[in-house]
Image (tube, rainbow, N blue to C red):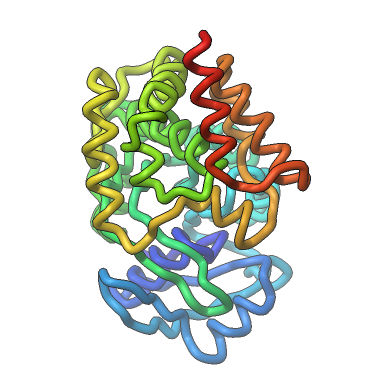
Length: 315
């Protein structure tokens, strides 16, 4: 498969390195010039307990993208989807298509740029972190599902992607997985306002009611049946907390990408994009708290989580 990956960070970098090593024709594209330079000079290093290897895969910044892109995988943060879509508009080959491996419901922005029938969606739950220029940590192996946005039978292009991408399996209900990720993600947003690990924020007794409440807010808004994955079961949220905690304790990625954005990389999170998908009193309160942390009025600490727990209990 010949593919250009837009966004060579945690997820895009992991996928790109593994596809390149498997023999696919991969070009990485990233806005971070230092990351691109490091990849071209020394290769992309995949580190962590899953496997350690270096992929000597070519990389460019957006200014150096080729005029024609056969197929694309979009792996940027959801708040950068419009920028990625603009890079693809007018470049995608006539028989090409785009796969989004992003969090959230981003397909409509890509469809507006390249055509409604040229976008495939996916659900990615393996954990990875950008460590620095040319370095990605893959923390675990987890569910990866690919399917047509409208659901239905597995198409040839979904089959091609499944055969080409690591860990991927096909699904006839990719939106159901994405809404499951929205619910699980809502719990991660809550936990990220503290300095606890993912496992502790999910499993400690004082926060369990908060976690199930915010996950239920997301599930209640899902327009399709919500799928289960990696210990998350939509009709057993309380049991899901223990299963998800156990799942996360096995990963080398102890804290969420949200926490890393807030406290390590000191950059804006995807919270406003997620807030377009999920509304509700508990999640609204979490969004406001995330804004406070982004803008320096708070820091990530357990007191924030305690405040959220009290708010959820009062409702």
